[in-house]
Amino acid sequence: MSKAETAVKNFANYNCAQSVLLAYCEDFGLDREKALQTAVGFGAGFGRHQDICGAISGAVIVLGLSSQFKEEDRRPKITETYARVHEYVKEFKENYGCVDCLDLLDGCDLKSEEGQKTFRENNMREKCFDYVRFCCNLLDKHLKTT
Image (cartoon, rainbow, N blue to C red; front, side):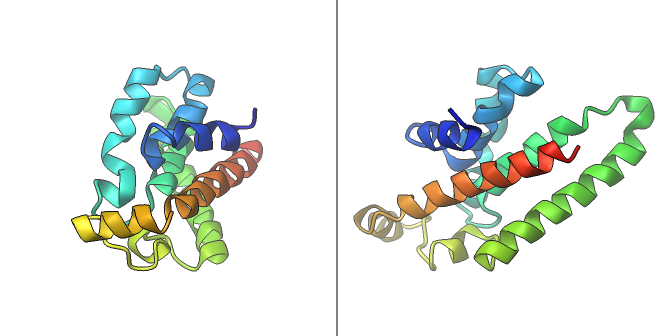
């Protein structure tokens, strides 16, 4: 099963950020429980604040894990990781036109009961499945270039 398929399957039980991170946690020796704890606050654009898409946040955590820097070489690795994150976000934005959860969900406000009802009734979770899938496929591309 591909990372994207695994993440989409995870999304049935976890938030978008957790779903992406869980698909990669074993690759970086990250315990499943720690991965769930690490990414929990990033779902729905930072705890339903609907800023940066949680799937992107999960991918950024993975990009950070992939840098595998040590304390003594952190400065160049941080600069390199920032450049990789910049390129990643740029490619996501080129594909979808934006990176904020609220915009990606066409203005559906997940902070309100009405917005959550709209999300459910209009099966907007399907959009999120697409974002999770795309984030993993894009992440696979970026991880191959490291």
